[in-house]
Structures are given as structure tokens and as C-alpha cells.
Length: 292
Image 1: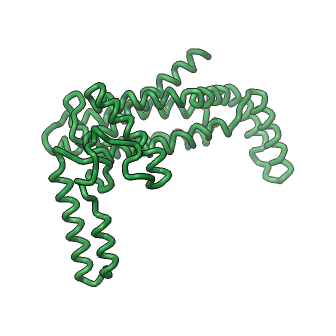
Image 2: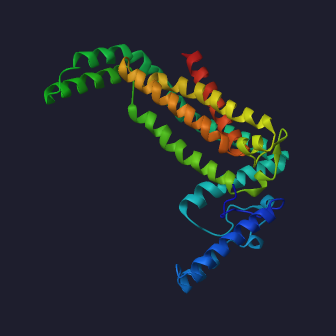
Image 3: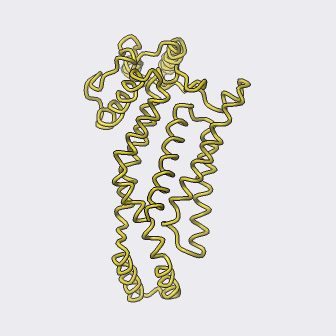
């Protein structure tokens, strides 16, 4: 998958990028001749097409290159891309660099993760009492009953030290980091030009299988297995008993299946990040459970 807004010059894939950019220019020209674009729009489109020679070499990438773009790119994507490249330059392997950066991010976020995991464990302990309250007010929909139910549940949350906002906080922190990591990997051509334990990091499992390299199909299996265990360990503190538990379990299983199917079109570089992140999440869960 070749995207336009890359951060540095491609080398081995330069001809492929040039071809993609040339095809885009031809498409704009065709629209201009057909009257779908004004002359000004056409000129703006031409200027927006990336000039590969204006980009630095990937090994020399800088956080401040190109000046300030957007808050998202300048604060999240560029610094993350810079760290991945610099560590890769030191250890001479960008696959291991992705693993190291993923581990570093998980370690930085561990205090938040620890709080979230403890909340999950406390939720499991409180679950029997919460289930009783659910049954107690199952057929009561009047405002007074709903207020009493809410007060009783809040009392149990306080008893077990449960703060629902704490669990949401970790999600708010992790989601932008995930998308920043995802974008940074795709915007670094040098990753797609490199190999990790014999696997081309730009290759998707589907493309590998179509090329007769069936061993790439191991990657989606890894994604499916680690995602299942990661989700399975995290869902325990989120569900109630009965129908709600079944619905939540079904939702998690559907998500695992969707991620497994999606992984066939993920680059090896993205899969390395996903598998590493999921394995660390499982290990962190195990550590907290053992400590409990």
C-alpha cells in the first residue's frame, strides 16, 4: 500500500512511488480536460503532488522537517516516526525497532494500565453484588427506582474502589497512540523496503500467499490468537452475568474475527506492532492477576 504523504525518500520502491504519483497526475489532467476541474483547481492539485527529491533520506529523518504541519502530525506522527528510525539505525533492524518502541510505549503507559487492570479485577469482585441489584430492579422502570438503583450501585463502586472514569482514561490515551503508530509506519518507505526474520515488512499475508509464499499466512493466525487472549482477559471486568454477559462475549468474538480477517491486508510491519502490543497486554494482565 503506497500512500502519498510519506515522510522520507523511498529507495528500492522509488519507481513504484513515482508510478503511483504519475498516475495521479494523469487522473487530475484527465479531469481537467473533461471540465471536472477548473484551471486553478488543476494547478493546486499539481502542486500538491509530492516531489520525492524534496524529501530527506529516511535514515536522516528529522522531527522538525517540513516545519509545523498539523497538531496531529507534528506532535504524534513525526516524533514517533523519528524514534522508530533512530532506534532502527542503531540496532540495524527496523522490525526489532518497532518491537522496542512498542515495549517503550507500553512501559510509559503502564501506570495507567495498572490502574485500569486493578479496576477490572475489583469489578469482578463486585460483580455478584451488582448482579443482585440488577435482579432487584429488573422490572422497575420508574424514576424513583432508577435513582435508588443508581445510588446502590455507586455505593458498591465506592466499597470496592471502582472508578469507571479510570478505565476510560486509558482508552483515551491509547487510541491516538495506536493511530499515530499506524500512520507513522505507513509513512516510512524504508520499513516497507526492509525485512524482519526473512519477512518483507511491506508484504501483506494475502499478497504473500498469492505469490506462493504461504508462510505469510502464519501472521494472521498469530494476530487472531494474541487478539483473542488479549480481549478475553480484558473483558472479564466489563460484563455482568446473564444475557448481558452473552452479548458482550459475542461482541468480543466478532471483533476478534473482524481483526483476523483485516490482518490479511495488513503489512507485516503493522502486524509486528499489533502482535507485540497484544502479547505485552496479556503479560501485564497476568502480572496483575498474580499479584492479586
